Amino acid sequence: MSSQVRAPLRFVDHRKPDSLTFERRSHPRHVIRGHVTAVSSDPQDGNEQRRICALELLNLSDGGLGALAQEPVAIDAKITVFFPPHGPERGLDLTGRVVRCTQREHGYDVGIRMTMRYAA
Image 1 (cartoon, one colour):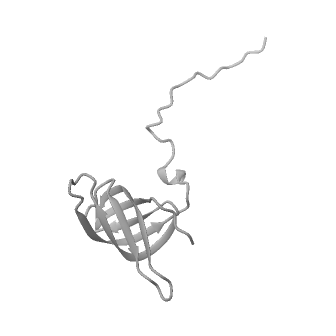
Image 2 (tube, helix red, strand yellow; image 1 turned 180 degrees about the vertical axis):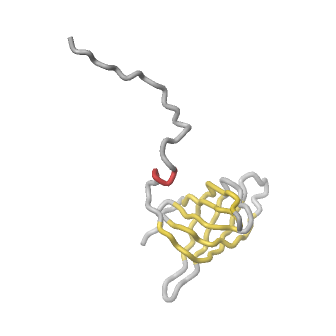
Image 3 (tube, one colour; image 1 turned 90 degrees about the vertical axis):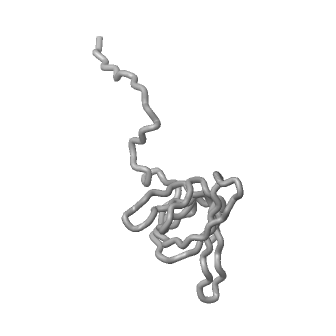
């Protein structure tokens, strides 16, 4: 008889990721620099009051973008980012939802998931 070693079964807790978040992205991020204007509306506000804020772009992918803001932006807020025209090219408006807003030394790190894909 051959001796077989059986590995014990164990429960895997999916709430604790075994890899870093950036390793599971479905779209590659591209470093980008620039300043854009955004308008956000907080879903928790009953009157849907809109706020204008300036964003400093950090990165961009097909699924969203990362930026720095001077003031916090509410999680799950609907946000529209306005990219100004450049030379003969037209401007671009992207709409999404805020998925992350963490305080940093000089502002807030904001993550936005885009609801519309944009064409190259």
